[in-house]
Length: 257
Image 1 (cartoon, rainbow, N blue to C red):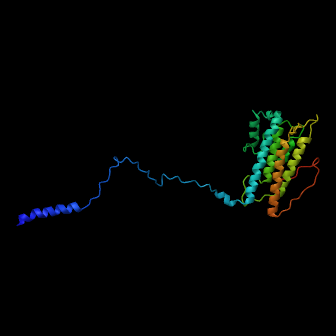
Image 2: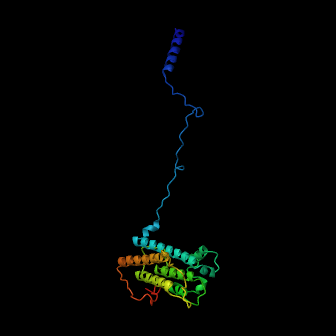
Image 3: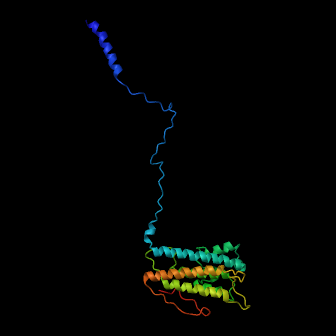
């Protein structure tokens, strides 16, 4: 009897095994022809750099306006230096420079701090006056531009960047604008013993070349505008001195405050 049941039991086991569904085998990576997408990890993601400057928090709108005016003023001074050298090539040759470009860079080299050896320690309007002295044998363009630059930088407290803690004096800036006007008048009016101008600038051509006048006008306009902005903000009054341009003397800048 037991021998008869064994074949039947074995057949039942085979039937049950056939009913169980096994998962299909995983295909081999080597056999798959479909390309796999790249794995994106934290290391491969490009992290954008932040352009935030923490120092901008310490700046007011007036500070940013002042910085813009400083950039414009010194850009005009550099342009004027090049223009004057091209009109007066003998000047850049006096100091043994190789070219106009080298002579301009010498003036604006921050290592010199507007103090070239031939000025003998003079800065500001004292250096400007060298450009109109009969006995001066140095570079008159360098004396004029360096003197104006150091005077204007003094009016801006010797800075090109400003923060909320900075306190600009509108009177200094106003006086600087008037001093630039006096320097421009001297440039086109003061002559040596032979009746010749110390430095050539505007040309009496047709139409007239007024590029020098425009650049000086930009400087004066920028200084006047920023002095008014600061005066209005700080509720300070600018003392306006009336004097004839022909007999005018340079107004103080460094000795204020």
